[in-house]
Length: 324
Image (tube, rainbow, N blue to C red):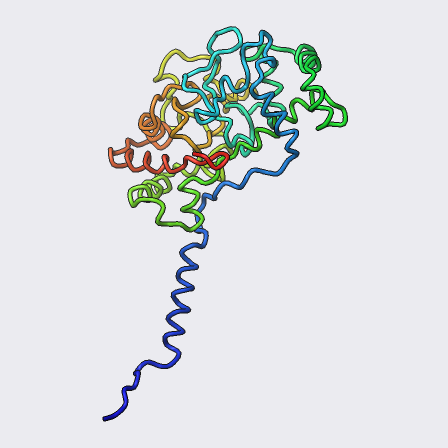
């Protein structure tokens, strides 16, 4: 009887194993997509971050000790507010909807009309706004200096202790930690392609195919450009009751081309930050998608379009401090 001979080349098994290893590695490789995962929060002096956290929750920044940053930017509600317009120190509604503070550090400008270049400028504008905190720097500085705990912590964190610049710097350092990586979509971009359902992947594809990604772009999926609200039709006129806030960038530049132009909002954690738009006029994601299709894309979405895109948008919910 002839001995049994393996008909395969001796190296075939090794080649197959190598190919499997390469394939497994390629599955985990980052995807080549126009959108990118969020970075990890930057490193900063933990003493300054903690000071910023305390100041963010301190109502003494407002003129009548009633309103803190966290009153409107609720960290348990996606960093935004569940009202169409938050209320200021005097109990009156503000002029626009409160945008989320999560990932705001990645926006190219701050505020809907982009009037602040930095988080520090934004913080000062809010503290002294006659509609928001209504305070002044003399009062704020005196209150912080009068607090022995603050005096001690500022002296430990800053050579010149309590100053306007240091208060704003601490607030900004804290806000820069408010990044929310770890969304299912980020994990998908990082190579875990099985993390999304087929319908969620279809939603992402339609988000790209229909052109939503032309404005909602970059690592923050928005927040890096201005755009007119109402490219195909006048949304403000159709909504009715126009206000000065509806003029958007025009209030800053006085350029007629900037009427109804706003900073494109980030879509990260968008499922948590209803109602939507600068006026808070869209109560649900579904309504927001309908309005965007009609006024920004010039088309009416099918029920399937709407459902799939909303499913995709819900994959953008990230984590803060490793918690959803």
